[in-house]
Length: 415
Image (cartoon, rainbow, N blue to C red; front, side, top):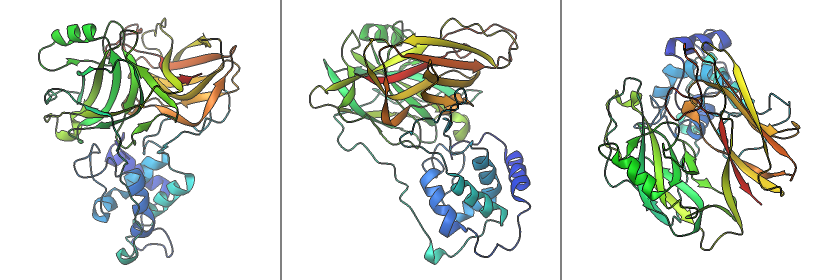
């Protein structure tokens, strides 16, 4: 349960309307904190909602959770928490979505448990018989390299609380495959997410020189002439990215000879005043070149023009199979900016959905790896559809800047 999008008052009101007025006496045999709710919170919430975490408050104890029981119930009922964007069913086709690895979504039964607990007055239960789970996030123990900026960076104060910064991380191996990555935030309370790119050293050096201090401001991408090659992404609460066995992102070719890391700092949780941070990334390289090199291939819609004041304006594109050979899609990384409303990736015949995000939230973007790869035939076409709301009085088009928009998804592909 990372970041709540409604105020305490609104969320509590929603919970009371759904659950009824909390009672002074718990229902006999109903869910309690120590026996039923604590293990759910440990498994799904405490990666962020701990002291010093990115969550705006801690949920590490009964005393911390009880006064927020109504808000917790409302947030899980609306499925705004824990943040997990993909729908179980693709809205355009009605087909089931793929089974994703490392899903943070709660089941209907788990949601009912939290709602019932809040509606019963958030009973504590017996601490002597409490049920706990291991909430620890695994680490990448066999990393080949740990990369970091050359010095700490202190995010400047920002009225909106969001700062995006790109950092050069050094040259790449001549040719290798990245098979796993893990991001280690320096200050967990302010590092909201990070994206790793491969770039061209000359372009990275030139861009870095344009801005004083370490790195440069960036939004939506690394802001390089060649765009940069997407390598992986991280958000709080997610385990290290493990690419499927026998696959890896091939790097060190086509002039992409250096790493760039984009870090999104959210300063709302630290009172708007940034703290010195040096976020790191661990990488595991294949011992030899993998048998199935993977490429993060973009599917895009560039030539859209969102009219002023538009509501639910949509655009779509259809891309051919890029090689005309049988391909396997192992994951998808969708991307839009803050006017984004929905995004979906599916095949032209609507027979297979890759991802459908009906309520896009720029603050909770990440990649989604499938439990099983999806085959794309040589003649199959992949479709991308995006929709936006434009509350401004200007036409909005594709671009890197905060006020521009995008319609993009990277597919993790192998032969």
